[in-house]
Length: 220
Image 1 (cartoon, rainbow, N blue to C red):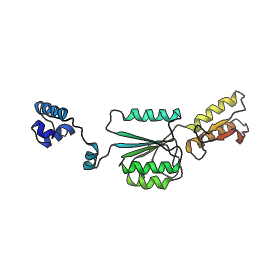
Image 2: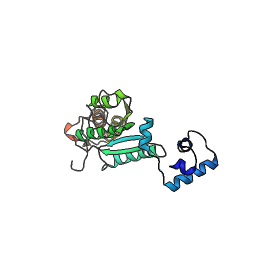
Image 3: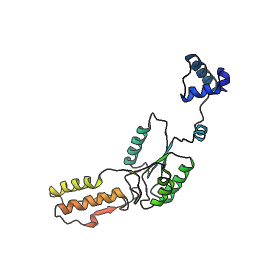
Image 4: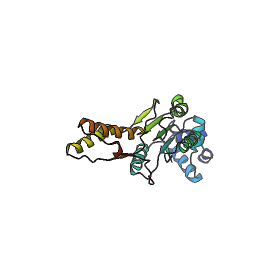
């Protein structure tokens, strides 16, 4: 329709839209006017099917109530601004079944990659079968999936907690409590290790009862 309205070939319109070949300024103006008149928008889904290249990226976070996760998503969103990629954000609420259902739904959209804070640290096979073995990019944040070879991004929680607790102990503080998430997750486990190692380095006994692990939701 655009080609007919502009009086050019469909190949010329395609070259203009996809920037595959240059078109003259006069032809470009005619195509622009035809697109405006017809209110034409390229069908990205159809283009993806034809080229077998998809620009949707999945993002799964535990929730957005925690300002920490909100800031992580803001950073992800900022990184993808001014790119051709589209973010698909979902929340697992730290429920494995929900996380798996979200992954299946995202894969049905043919996402080109997934950014994930998982609640399944031991379910390596699931992500190996759906991502690693298919060379589909998978980026894990904070929570490592055991025995899975993929990109992992995290703070050095162990070292951070070690230095914080050691500093407090050196000031004579002894009644120090640690509140953290489930110990089965990598980042939380690293916090606990840093807490314990700081006490050991100062020859100060630590009471395991002063470590509280809980799901990081409003109820807990």
